[in-house]
Image (cartoon, rainbow, N blue to C red; front, side, top):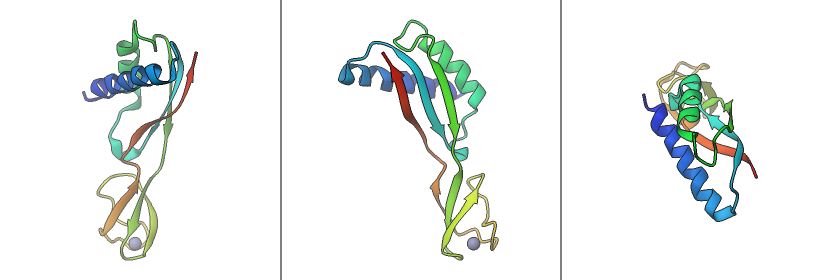
Length: 113
Ligand SMILES: [Zn+2]
């Protein structure tokens, strides 16, 4: 399951930023996840708890914000909502879509000490 390596990546970022911004404890992490990132929220939560043990984020709360998927339709020439990578346009049924949002995962905010 790739959630484990994602969780490890998050801890890595937290540790790097701790050195730059000189904090010693992470209390809350807000994480934005798009529907196309194929990340299982519950699995990630479980992995996060496991990999943060004995780190600066030990006991930190993980808050997951699910952002919407969006793509630009070449046919309609506008942004349309999508829920999967190979969705067709909800308005015209075209498959000429370019994903503009929803395949990312990023740390939006941190609460630190
Ligand atoms: Zn369209």
